[in-house]
Every structure is written in C-alpha cells, then in structure tokens.
Length: 297
Image (cartoon, rainbow, N blue to C red; front, side):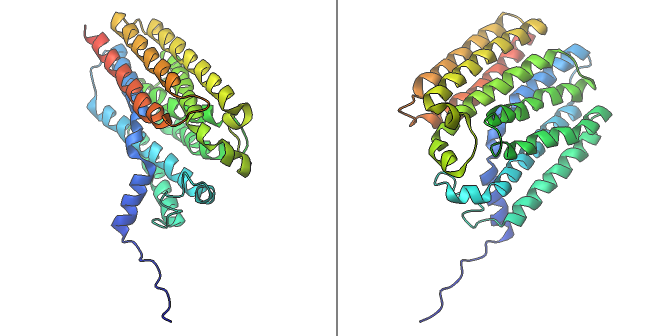
C-alpha cells in the first residue's frame, strides 16, 4: 500500500494571505474611527489645520499595533484554538500557517509600530512600549482574570489617546472620557461575544465574565457597561464643548446599543454575530461622522 502523501506546503504568499484573513484587518473599524475623531478634535484645538503626515502615521500605528496584537493572540492561543470547535478553522490549527511564521509576523508589526512612533513625537516614541505591553498583554488575561473583556476594551481605548498625543505631543483631560467610553463599549460587546464559549471556558479553566456570572448575569453586566459608555460620551461632548449634532449622534448610538441588547437573549445567542460585527461596527463610524458634522456647522 502506498504511503499517504503529506499535505501540500502552502507557498509564502498563500501563508501571508491566510495570516491577513486570520487577523481580520477589517475589524480595525472598531477603534479606527475613535482615533480619527480624537485626532480631528486635537487638530481643531491646536489650530494648526490638518497635518496629513501625522494622520498617516496614526493610521499606520493603528494597523501595526492591531496586527501585532491579533498575531500574538493567534500564536499564543494556538493550542486552545485547536480544541475549540468555534476556532479550529483559524490558520494555525488549520495548518495554513506555522506558529513560527505567525510569531515573525507579530514581531515585524511590533518593530514597525515603534519605528513609526519615532516620526510622530518623543512622547509617542517613549510611550510605545507601554502601549504594546497593553495590547499584547490582553492575550494572556483570560488565563488569570475574568476582567479580560475590560482589558481588551482598554487596549482599543489607547487608540484615541494615542491619536491625541500624536497631534498635541501631550496628555490632556479631554480624551480621557473617550477612553472610558471605548473601554466600556468594547468590554460590553466582548462580554456578549464570549457568551458563546461558556462551556469551553469552563472545561479549559479559562476566565470570563459569562463563566463567572452565567450568561444572563453577563448580559446584564454588558448592559450596565454600555450605559456607562453613553454617560462617558455625553461627558466627552461637554468637555470638548460639542454641539447638538454630536448629542443627537450619541442618541443614535444609544439606540443601536439598545437594539443590540434586545436581539441577544440568554436562551438565544443565534444573532450574536449581528450584534457583535454589524451594530458595533456602525457605532464607531456613526460617532466619527457625528463629530465631523458637528464641527463643520
């Protein structure tokens, strides 16, 4: 009997495409609009007009930091992903990418992120290792704390603060409310998403709020976090002296979040992808557009 042939070795381009598909670059939309609106308001405050080189640097940092974080997550969680039916199709468990290749991709994005911050300003450069520690550290959090969801939220909330620092070269109080809004918004919808993995988290000894509180309790906490989100957005508008269009936009976001919580039930998680991807993708874009229109009228 002839020996079974080994699976074909994917060419480098196919492996790179598999990595890009696995890190879901399109999900940058969750945090990118917040970074852009923070940069927009910072430019207005500084009165310098748009500096498009800084905008490009902010965009590059967003892509590199998120790619590093996702690559590290896929590398670190490769064994866990191989045992979870929901994640077995990811590139490393599926054999499309070797762990060493994912790690090399991660490290290249870490270096690229830090190099770009050199061209922004000294504060951004020296804060870069701290930012990288937060975004990479998220992948370890579920191994020791149920608050990993808020860690993820804070990791994404670094984006608007980073954009503000990139434009102004300093810390100011205004973006702190936006940091709180992003942290609770992301933490809230990540709690929703992780409700799918309660049984798996229990079997693997992983920490999550749905495992700790039960699905019903986790959904209630997610609602509370999103109420805080709206409060933080209102406070951000007051701090930045924004107008009626902005507050109307916050009202729309409140309606979107309310809809999100209406379609996800403890006994019916079938529409969780609609809540996670579609509605939350709309939240950040709607807010960004609201800030732009409010500043133009």
